Amino acid sequence: MMSVLVLLEQRGELKACAFEAATVAAKVAQAAGLDVNALYIGQALGDQSAQLAGLGIAKVFAYENNALGHYSNDAYVPIACDLAQELGAKVIVGSASALGKECCASVAGRLGVELAQDCVDAWWDDGLKVRKPLYAGKLLAEMRVDSVPAVLSLRPNVMAAARDGGSTPEVVRRDMPEVSLRTVLKEAVEAAAGTVDLTEAKIVVSGGRGIGGPDAWPLLQGLCKTLGAALGASRAAVDAGWIEHAHQVGQTGKVVSPDLYIACGISGAIQHQAGMRTARIIVAINKDPEAPIFKICDYGIVADLFEVLPLMTDEAKKVLAA
Ligand SMILES: Cc1cc2nc3c(=O)[nH]c(=O)nc-3n(C[C@H](O)[C@H](O)[C@H](O)COP(=O)(O)OP(=O)(O)OC[C@H]3O[C@@H](n4cnc5c(N)ncnc54)[C@H](O)[C@@H]3O)c2cc1C
Image (cartoon, rainbow, N blue to C red):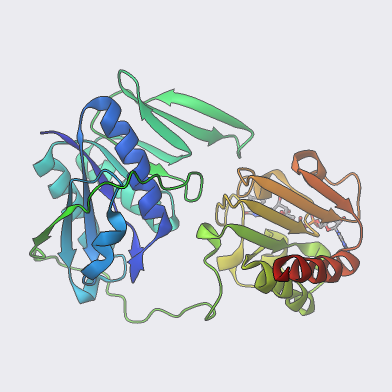
């Protein structure tokens, strides 16, 4: 039976975007009359397979290897391609995270098939259709993918994982094939312990040039801590050396789709919008009423962020405590 294959992303444990990709895979598979299978590569899957219950996945093919807990293009791509061919996968669904996009592009290239990156939805209607942002998110295009097999990556956080209470998938453990690694990861340095992953965060608080310098981060981090939010930044703040590039949101940074995006001292240049426009609710704090960010925000506060942020943090604390 031909199938839809979902590439489960993990970092030590399965990421939320893996369940979202599985949800889209199930939707496509159901309409196309296909099975859903999943590929897991990483450290022992263990009881995490229970987290995959109810997502419509028939089998999880698990390649467990401690050395491959971290993504390796050399290892992951051949395994994904071989499995896709073995299963006759018509559609391969990954996540549009930084690593997911790399993996999906490599898989599509190696298989010589169509690729649709950074989709916000996909479905089957007499063929594979996807919805994806174009022109830095200024419009959402619905596209038909010309031929299958095809690979698509789903932007994290654009949809909730849908579970139907069904069973846990069967886990098929596979021996890790011999792979020659051209690159070997020697060390992974966590940015900061206890902080929320930017691309998976439900709330993001971002700072731009308007924060005036790195001394203002504790103010934003205070709000992040209260709301359980991740800290983002504009390129101006990154280029000024106030924060690492890992926090940059935008065309040349990360793409985020949180429920709530709070832009502090960010003008809202088109390249910044490319990374946050699909947030469900956008709040902007900016002194300049003409700032472009006010054209795309849901709530605009024309004020000095140094006055607004302490009030917002105090109020959030009160509301959350109540
Ligand atoms: C190829 C390319 C790729 C790019 N990629 C990215 C990207 O990935 N991400 C990105 O962000 N940018 C990107 N840029 C840069 C982008 O064009 C803008 O220059 C950048 O986003 C501006 O950052 P900013 O909004 O923080 O700064 P500014 O545009 O300088 O805006 C600062 C804002 O802060 C407000 N402000 C000042 N003081 C206060 C205060 N006390 N309280 C409240 N508001 C205040 C000001 O009114 C102003 O609107 C890219 C540009 C190019 C050409």
